[in-house]
Image 1 (cartoon, helix red, strand yellow):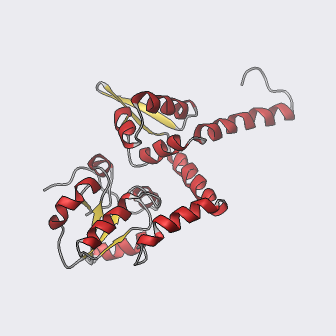
Image 2 (image 1 turned 120 degrees about the vertical axis):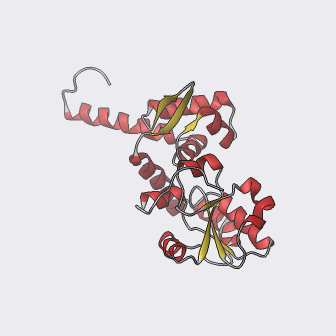
Image 3 (image 1 turned 90 degrees about the vertical axis):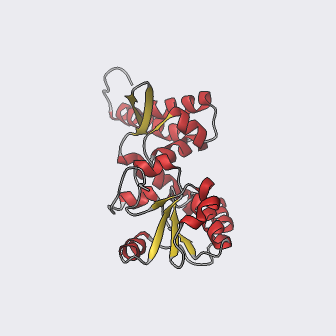
Length: 229
């Protein structure tokens, strides 16, 4: 936008042009996935490319679009450049997009029912239930995200076993107590896959209805740092 705005029509045109910048920036599935990954914590372009199954060139290009729309910000950590979401309004934006899509697009509901509901022989547990039951020692909370995401922020007391290690580390989990697995959000497949593995090993397991970003934005307790032991 350049020059001086002098009429109501120019004001509206100028504003809607800027609003459209945000819409354009999120109008790509991989850019939405990158935002979802950044909701877990700041990451380098190398980490984001690997997590989103993108080449470095493609990841850099998609992040540049998000940065130009002011949806992500960067900071230097030594020789690395770390990306992060610009602020909590970006979380609100991503959540709104997914909620509208689920409400208005039947394809979203069909995919959710086919993949998630088919695996939920028991109802997923909600965040408040988990908080109460974890405080009472009634469940083991299992974070199956990559260890870097766990270190950036996790549910207090959660055990960190990334999904790709879980099959070999089920014996590390206590027996006789229900396990509640969580990951990046309500549409993250990691927790659902973890529950399948655990039940196959004859463990009682359910998944958390939401993911870590939703837990944090609900104002529930959050811990940081790597797991000890």
